[in-house]
Image 1: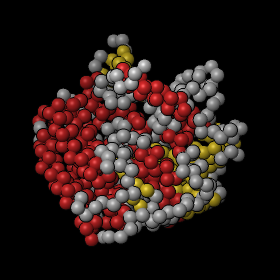
Image 2: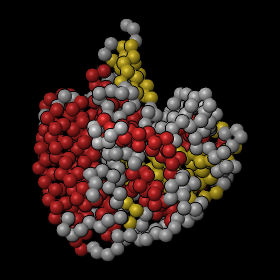
Image 3: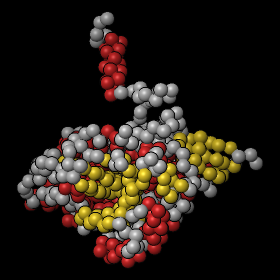
Image 4: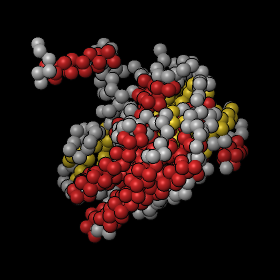
Length: 399
Length: 142
């Protein structure tokens, strides 16, 4: 039988972001998978070299729109490692609360998408509905549903007010029956078992050779979690567990994420209890970053975020390296998708909860001269022209 | 735990270590000559169960510096292997045949800093567009 290539992407209804998967198939069977990326590359590491350390924390928050606080937490961890900074205890609890609220909304987002991909649209609608209260809490305590700007070298930018604590507690408690419902809807549903069990298996050996991370690794029985392994923020100060499954299939990945949400609720409540009694500063008021190097990590919803920073004592980093978890997780599809059928490929591709923005961090260059075409000034000019055009079109402006 | 890891590496490569720098209790940097990198990477990955978290490429103006960050998850330790390579002829042996997960990491350093990873199975561009001019490396300082 002739071999055929089925293109998934770069723009595809199944993906929220551009990425190109070429499935080499024979009949229904996937024989090989080629992954092309780079459609979202924004050169953030290079941009970081021209920003002050205070700005870098804001910049890295723009790496991803879903797990937007993951990069700032890794960033402050790296800079605090570099400069040997001790963070006030109260700020640690606030960091963990923000980190876990983010895991809750990110896992609910994934659960919804996964439901949608297998045609279980009720789960999609439910998951996204119950994700809203989490975002409302974010808006209440940080001012934003996304891009919270809470992290700062030496602490956090805003305190959590004591009258917000009962509201966060109520939201976290309110999620428990919802999680019970999802546990029932997913883990006890024979149709979901039939659809997802044994599909897209990633073995322990594959996790190790590809260096896979987060729920992708934990669903294959590898108990790695930066929050436990390399403790930071308030994770060593409250009680919680690392969730693992052994099977490595899509079902196991779903189970890990659902059970992890219970742990996130536990961590949030533990931290809120401490916030009631631990008072004091929330910022160590760091003045400067000395020369040196530092490494910081954070267990993002998709796995370990890794930041390396080098300083020469000036106010901008000499080198700023970012490695997001999807960068290690997406290549594992070469193992989990290949050998399966075309119909299983989509949910398997989605099972690592890929985040392309994270993976690639555009520059437009004239191919003949090698000169940069799209500069910051050009982008601002294009944006201003578009605003004027829209205003004219809707009659807000004459002429 | 971090001490045990360092002791094991010191024991195995006592003659090859150029410098050890302990930044903090769980962050260790060890310098090696670039020709020793595949051997050390193989030991850390296969014998000691280290996980290659990522590698950082840096243009230090005089050299190209590469740091291979290995995470030892049970103790939360990161051992970064540091090596300097000649900027006029930036070449080093690929570690992808040892650690599959290094494939994209080396491809990215290759296109952004112009390092040739010898014996890499698939050393083509990863992030940059195919029309990006040859010989222009975004993270080089020139």
